[in-house]
Length: 262
Ligand code: HPA
Image (cartoon, rainbow, N blue to C red; front, side, top):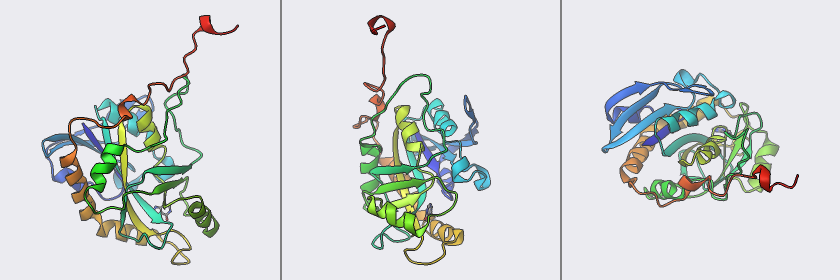
């Protein structure tokens, strides 16, 4: 089953499907937002709105761990996530789509692992699913790589921070991509993100960034994004060519008492 985690304004993809149904699931971390189940291109798809109805949860308050657990519980093994981002480079413009291949995580108050009682270190050398990324990129409509910088928010960045993120190798900056990507990896799910560039990051093109300009670009690109998602869902084959499903292999510290030096 394919999961879509929608940022702002992509719910319309559900209306392209058939056999639409709705579901809320309970998780150890709270209940999920209402999810929409539907069939698209003969595939089972679940849509989840990241911020819940009406953008109720700001980025730092989203229950990422419950969202990912709920999708896993629904039987989702592949996630396509959408995120709005600011561009850290003049050459990447509002309206562009970026499919990140790596991230820099500057979040600091989010529950970011399922493994508090087991010692599990998942490998994130390549944090996004290579197969899903290839499918998104094959549309020819995206910038096929980039480093996603995730901030805690909810404020936008200072000019000095934007400068630092760019110097560290960041391509775009957003507030919602993490810990989502890592939590999906911890549950051995494929995860890729399609980022809509909604603005130049603070200080790059103007002295004041407003949420109105962010929403305006997201709204203008909504139809393209939905087409891109729909096209990608059509192209996802049954077989996995990636290693996301084996993420826990070799990740866990497993020392039995007998072998320990006491
Ligand atoms: N910074 C952080 N998050 C964002 C931005 C930005 O410029 N644009 C959209 N989400």
